[in-house]
Length: 284
Image (cartoon, rainbow, N blue to C red):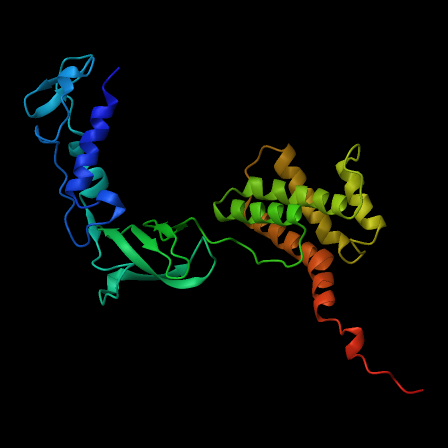
């Protein structure tokens, strides 16, 4: 095997040389990548299968040829065209390139994020830090942010298992995994039925839907669009054609409204209902 630890050592030295040791970015500096000098490199003569040639990059254990420094490979691919914005993320800066508006995919807030670095080409890719939660994101050249903001709105009063499934469906939509989004929305119907008392074992999917209708969790007025969730989920699970984006987002919207009707309205009613002590007795 090739002496992989040697590659790691060379790269580590390059990172230290660039001023990134200990995780602290070298603000406003060029990367400074360069091979490990002989004085900093470990004694590779004692490493089985590794050979050195003075201060040059080590020889490959298999071919006997000099192995290119990883810094040479990474210079243009990773660091060569990056601009590190002075002070971004840690101190105020008046450079207009140091800020970008957007919705944070971590905390969901609309913020003016700090740009830590960006590529020189236009449109440029950017590495940002949220000024609200402090988490980092990547903005691609096409303007898409990773992680992307969750699609859909929060719903209050959800049981944990239902809340987790709803969050998963939103996350799937946020990364364009629309088949998974519709499959999860279909599963949410099952979670609701079980939470409301349906028998988890031995009940078919149709049985879960029937249970919701029979116990008035799905009213006659809701039935047409709840059936849309079922139908679209079945297509995603059982059929091969690619899931349509607009259809999947519609499925997620119907799921959101179902959860509001089943859970959030009851939750808000309990929160805002007048307490017994606050109700004045009425005179006959």
